[in-house]
Image 1 (cartoon, rainbow, N blue to C red):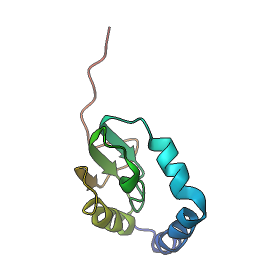
Image 2 (tube, rainbow, N blue to C red):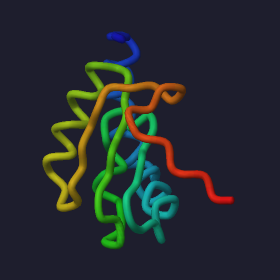
Image 3 (tube, rainbow, N blue to C red):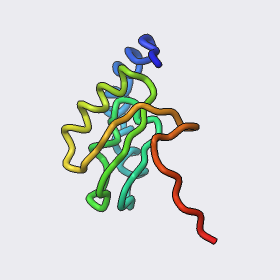
Image 4 (cartoon, rainbow, N blue to C red):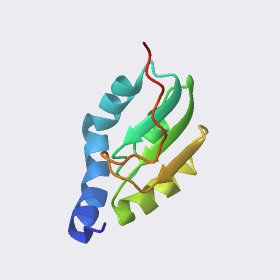
Length: 101
């Protein structure tokens, strides 16, 4: 899946949003998470730097190839093991969890 216009726009716009307070919002949204995280729609991976120390690993799913590439680069810069893979929300590349009865 490739959307080059959206990708270019997002890569231009999202750092500006972070400078205007979105980074603080990211930190607040992710605070308190722990264990393994599945992030659906990782875009360019700007959340990765804001995961708290209680997070042990991140599997980030992003369908758009250009954003996935940038997300992979951002994943390499964070201390938490973070894997970026292709996928979409209705076909996630993970096993279903067992159902509790």
